[in-house]
Amino acid sequence: MRARYGVPLGITAVGAAGLVYAAGIEPRSFRLRRVTVPALPPGMRPLRVLQVSDIHMVRGQRKKQRWLRSLAGLRPDFVINTGDNLSDPEGVPEVLDALGPLMEFPGAYVFGSNDYYGPKLRNPGRYLTERLQGRHGLNGNPPAVGVVHNPWEDLRDGFDAAGWQNLTNTRGTLKVEGVSVELTGLDDPHIKRDRYAEVAGGPSGTADFSMGVVHAPYLRVLDAYAADGYPLILAGHTHGGQLCIPFYGALVTNCDLDTDRVKGLSTHTAEGRTSHLHVSAGCGASRYTPVRFFCPPEATLLTLVGRARG
Ligand SMILES: [Fe+2]
Image (cartoon, rainbow, N blue to C red; front, side, top):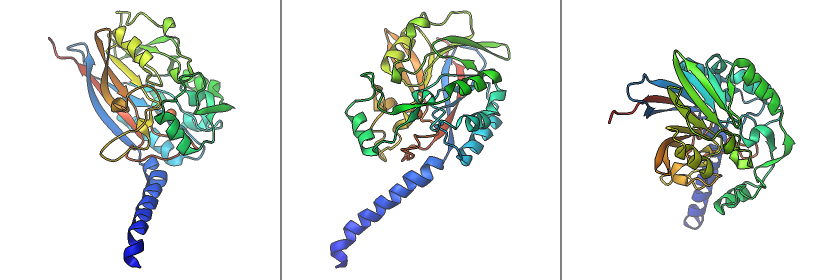
C-alpha cells in the first residue's frame, strides 16, 4: 500500500509546499539587487540610481511599505519609478506614504497600465496560457486590465508635489550635485499610450547624461530609444516572469521582449546603436495573482560608471 501511494503523495506534498512558498513566502521576500552599468561618458563621476517598479500596492501591505521606506537609507542620487504602483483603487495614500522618504531625493516616474486601471479577477491558468500564446495586448485589448479606473491623478499630484518629474510622453532634467541628467519618458506601450513622436530626436547633447524610461519594454520602444542613441533604458512590467522554472528561468515577459531579457541588465541594438537595458522584476504583483516563484520581489540600485576610454 505504501509503495503504491507513496510517490503520488510525495508529489502532492511537494506541490503543496511549492504553492505555500509561491503564495505566502516569496512575494514577501523583498530584496535589493545591485548592478553596475558602464553607461556614463568616460571620466564622469558615478551616479547611484534607485529603480522601483511594479509596486502593485494593496491596502494593508505593511511589510512592503516598511521595506520601501527603508530604501531611503541607500541615499541614491536619484530615483526612477517605472510604474504600476497600484493594484487597489484605494491604495494611493499608502503608495505615497511608503515612497515618502524616497521622494526626499530627486526623482522621476512613468505610469503603467495598472496605475490607470484596476486589475480584473482572472483565471491564473488563462493568464499564463494567453501570454505563452503571445496574446499580450498587442491587438488593442489589453487582457490584464479591466474597467475600474484608478485615481491616478492623485498619484501624479503626490509625486509632482514632491518634485518628482512626470515623464509621460515627455522629457525632463534632473540636477544632481552639478550633474545634469536628461530623462526621456513614455506612457505605457502595453495599452498603446506611448507617443514616441512627441519625444523623438534622442539626447539633446546639453546634459551630462541621458536615459530613456518606460513601463513596458516593448521592442518598438527599445528600438526607438536605442536608435536615437540613449546609452541606458530603464523599464519594468515583466515581473521577471513572476513564476519561473528553477534552473531554466521565465516562461513569459507579458510583452514582445524575449525571456532572456525578462529582468536585469542586458543590451538592445537598433540601427547599429546599442543601449544598456535594465528591466526591473518589480516588487509586487496583481492582487488577483499574488504569487512569485524563483523570482523574488526587488528594487535595484544601479551604479552608473564611466565607459572605458577607447
Ligand atoms: Fe506590473
